[in-house]
Length: 367
Image (tube, rainbow, N blue to C red; front, side, top):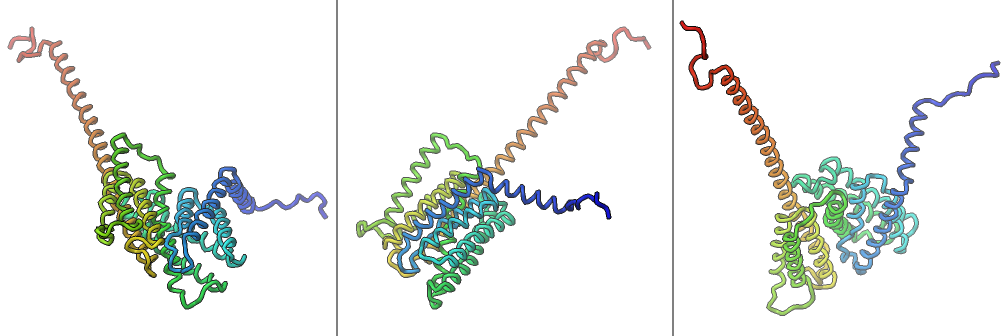
């Protein structure tokens, strides 16, 4: 019996696994990440409660769920480590709305999965936070994160409601469509604006651009009030005026960066949703208000952002071509200068040997 036998050493893979777990815990528990988690949870709770207050008792009245866009933007900007903030915020909203603990946990998991799935699809197929600078990536963002992931998670969330006895199975399709429209609009409207505002260094506007942007926003606000505001004179055809938003949105997409275009879609969405939920405008007072206004805002937002992405791509490609032109021009100028220097050197050498301007050497041998 060996009394001096050394204790068994842990395997290298076990040590590596423990070290990896420790590193992850350090990242999650860092002061910066904890502050971000608290901000995400608080934002989800505040905007979630506001969204519930704007909704009426009719399940077909809720048309926007901003927390879905906020959570997706948080995951795109900070990575998957923000999921605890999403879970806590969603759980607090659900439990404070007369939900049971089990159903609230289910809702929180559903919201967390929606944000993580949407971010994975955007990062995998649409270049992540750069998805709003090329039309192809922007359309992939709308399809994958705005339509696909929200539709799936809306079905899961509505099923959880019915499992908990908070709704009737006869209204499943209506409840699912309302849930889906709300999450889709929150993703398409809020996520681009937040990612563009917080994710990259922005181009500073000059004085003339600021003045132009002020005119654009004020004109857009006036048109939105005429379309979606309270009662106006009878001569104002509201249904026809709804298309007056298009010039301002196209203006923002062509003249400014995607950030300003996302901001204009956010303004239009705010006016449209507020007026429609209060019975104003062409979509007010209808039982299918969320579907109609959701379709209008989804098409409007996607079109505006696509125009802005196409304009940004064209400007970027033009800048690349001009930069390449200047580089080539400098290279050619350098080659020309070098050739001129060699010619001058050769002329000096010819003058040195008396050959400059003469047909034969000076003092050469006679034939």
